[in-house]
Length: 347
Image 1: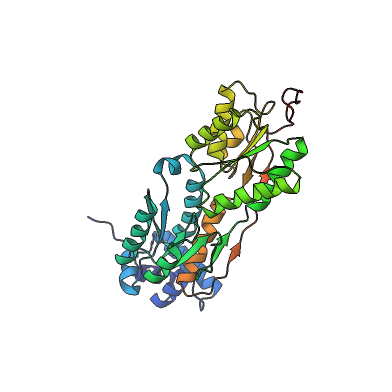
Image 2: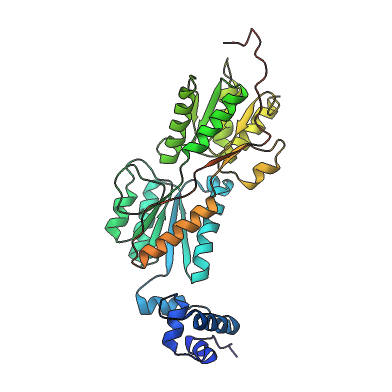
């Protein structure tokens, strides 16, 4: 015999209140005293009550789900710890309120736009979190056209109808450059992400301007697709130069870790012969030998804050842009003073 699923009526009976009051308490609405709310929540927990998304959707014309569409090669997503951390943060905001995340991974921008249209056409989500902002990003206008509420991760490069949850990369990159220059490095390279992605171009610009402020050239930059394999390719190119860099600043940790492997296989010692820094502070970086100097961005908190802001927006609240704590350098073992330059290698 199928087990009876607890209902709001069961919770109301157990708590000794009306069904309406239970509904107010479970949906965190005003008009319920703290003591009564606590009694209702305790009764719901004891009964094992869980919200029925199907019933709520039918009664409110809501999907009770948020969408996240990521347009990158699945192999890049699988290898980059940033995305699992971001998704975990989103889920920490959704699970307690009975909401779901609809995740779609596609390989092209065309497929990405089609995915947004499908989500809207089938009423699968109430809003979307837009990540990996690009130059002249068409997704902002599309979400508006489709009637989807949205929150962007970062500030677009044009006026946006949606609030942004942003984290400033610039302090992290500038601190990294200052750290390396302070150690004595003068030949510093940057393995960058795609220039079309705003965070890729912003990190590149921060790198170049930080070096220029120090009176150094910031033009030793190799663009990649953010993958570990492309990071390895870029590292090999830089090390093959007649005057290779003594330090490399990578735009994410997977590329930095791949770069360490390439350098070590070439016979270089990290950090004695080459300093390496990453970005995003993935857990594995601190367990490498040497441990990875990197920039922390609190990806999980970013996801939680974005999802919470989008839920408020869907409920009809006014949501302003939210600025998270800026990126911060974490110094570990992969950065040190450069090797002495001999007359043969001096510029």
